[in-house]
Image 1 (cartoon, helix red, strand yellow):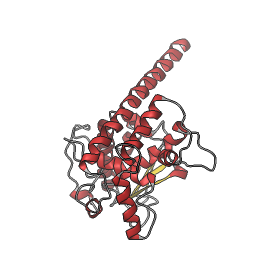
Image 2 (cartoon, rainbow, N blue to C red):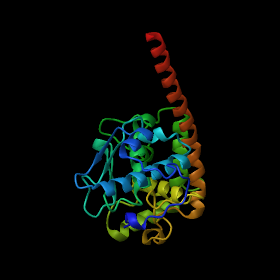
Image 3 (tube, helix red, strand yellow):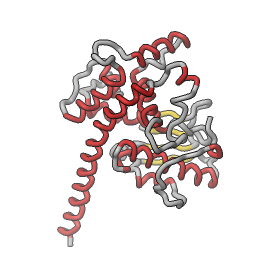
Image 4 (cartoon, rainbow, N blue to C red):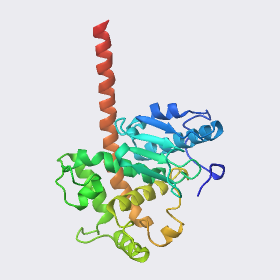
Length: 275
């Protein structure tokens, strides 16, 4: 568990030392709604706002995305210090499209849970999902759900392929095999779920990004007990997954940037028409 007072970050200064608010976070990153717990005091709120702002900015920077894209077209909600689960740092609630961070224990889980939110959001854009089908893109991929043909969707499938299949594509990757062994060891079905495999692969690549160290965004994919047990991709495997992630997210960011620019131009045109 990483407390706020233990937090150490290295990376660009996006805020120029200024205090930001959760309202700043909402508008900068295109979120739909932010919910704060009733017991979050002002000092805690201010510290958390800065930590979360920097973390989301780091994530956008690493993925080469415009900051507003992290809000997933203003469908993603954020909760801080509200509705947490005992012993859980953070969780994503598909029914509410809400990423929830615990008040004092949310550090290190933001990247993992963001992937869950993205995986959920993009499923209906990438696959022909049925009403009773899979609601996450990684699950759709594993179940061979029909893909919606688009170059970006093909790049997304390449991310899954590199992360979860062997080099020749004929077998599961050792990363998956190690997760299966972990599930057998603990007597459950968690580590080898495609959603969890991809969330761990994603956060591992984010933590391995050079020149940025942000333990509030992601933590312990290298030296934790789970990492030592093989629960994350190896450094060599991350070097293959990360380029596939960027090959997907960078053109996605370009497309979203053009879309946002087109929206601004439309608003300007409408305003000029009114004048």
